[in-house]
Length: 273
Image (cartoon, rainbow, N blue to C red):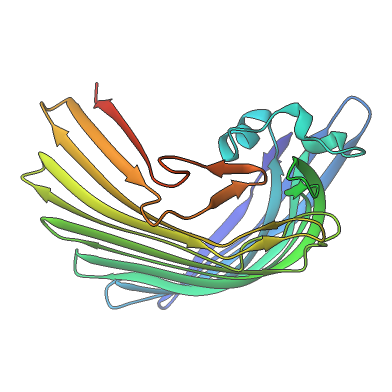
């Protein structure tokens, strides 16, 4: 695949414009295709760039390489391709994504970003499962309305982050599992002289369902501890699923620990920079 992105940028008052296009050329052993997508954005920056109000439209191709699918789901293998869906290692097309939002900061401590949009996606890799929970990947087309909001508060000695994600799709439930309508993640970390760290985290997701299989909603509460023994070495301990939930992110794969609930992990971290 080859992609080029010519862009023309100009400013009018406090308005910043970026007008361009994405030209994508895809080829395989027996076919080729060229796609053109919009890449347009307008930003209104106020209060010495502390507030950015923006809107735009974009699109593009995303190569579904084996490594990217493995990174998204470490259980993935070529056997995930469902019957008649052998082209999993192909390209997903984002025909368009129309969006608007705002972001910025208050001082150096508080940052935020909120974006809402509507997108049309083709040949995306979607999780599916049979009634017994055997997972597979299929290619599907769908539209999505979404809202993503995130904020971070960085102080010393406390750091806090929060993300809220809303996705409403028209995924065909006869083909694949829907995406969670609502998901969230949050973390709070306290440190002592940047040597000892203690944190609490929380994540949740609403149910995902197809015509034959349902992944239940879950809530995951975790605790973490880390101690730096030197400038380049630290040891850490983490506990998850402290609410003893049934956490199933991938069909048929339930995270299990003590009593099929809580689980712990430990390790060392080395910084060789």
